[in-house]
Image 1 (tube, helix red, strand yellow):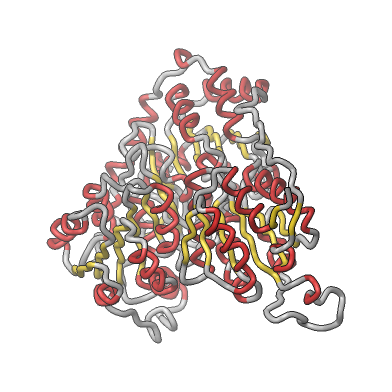
Image 2 (tube, rainbow, N blue to C red; image 1 turned 30 degrees about the vertical axis):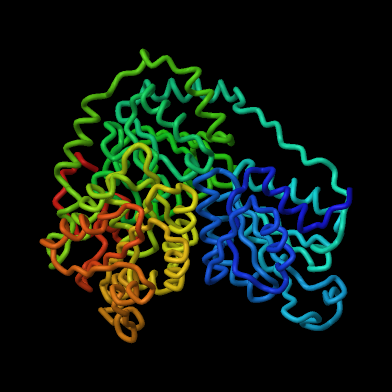
Length: 574
């Protein structure tokens, strides 16, 4: 029976158990919106900017494992998606971006003109380098094939975004679709036994083994397998920014965050190790420091990743395996006899001594006002009902990654590879729909929050249980910190020329309850107030000293264990 293309697209998404579509309306997606409305099985979430729709879809993809979906009209609607598309690409989030396009007879094609149809924009060419695939579908009969391909491509191997650009007259065309077939994927594949035997032998020979966990673990939906493997091997774990949540905060094998703003003890642990198993991390300069030879010195490094291009890239000499992490970890757990491994107590004692020697809350000992690391510990204490913690990008992001105390079923969501300010609020909206009715905690800075603050209307319109905590230092803190270190404290555009509103008053204007605090003795009462009603959106503005820095920080041009401010470190700790 003939079917309208836009109706088919709605049916396809529903058949794949897609529940949410994020969008901002526009003329070239009206057929899609009408079909989704009539279908009644998709919840359409109207955002106030297409970038926000893209960020929300990104997070739904991360949390659900199924593609998050965002729609945008042609021209400015499509181009406004770009930052969110890039975020999905760099952070390996399965997403489908559907853009409307002008009618086929209005597409300029090879004409030597800039534009034929109103708002015509070649979004396919613009996004081809930040998507797994970007297609314009001009033949309505090809719609089923391309949607099947897009879904499968988005969710396979290294996950990521696919963009489908559909002219308006294609959307309203009729097709004779074939029945929608669901994929029949094998859950896990047993393979790579020789590599794993070599790996297990190397672990047994080492005295200071370590696992470096990256964002690929969550992206490949392999967290439970990872935790099982850690307990069988009994090896301590350091994590990248994108893997803050792979182990609970109080887990005996969790060490902490590594990298440019990592926990000092975690970077020292990584420097001291003699064996590292890298899982789903690309070992970029923000993790390893710029002194590659020192990073590799004295270590055997095994690297497992689904993206072959990420291995033996910056850090060469690794024993590599190109594999999906879920397949690898499943095979590993079938081959390990946990009785063959025991906790290496001297190594664990050394790590615990480092933790005691360099506590995170003491990195701000020369700062005045609210200690951000202490604040994060307090937020954790009061936020046990939250299923997801979302951060924006900036100093607050680092303090959260250093000090939040997540339990076994709490997720940590942030923008890694793109590192886009403005990610936090729309990301928390996506998270809130995904884990409803559970509440979500958003931790943002004043600069990033202003970038997409219009989404407060989306929060209140949908009455989303988002607890918003804004650390307001009245500056773009992370770049101001760079200027302090590199430009003799010339704070152009970060402090000089920058200003922020009262977020307490801004929230009230949107009808959201809010409160502002400026001293440590107000924190507990304010956080208790924030959770008065877990189902209600509320905003807490926390005033932080403008000159409070994100510490510790890897010194420029130094190995990963050389962090500022400098501390007296026993040579044995290096």
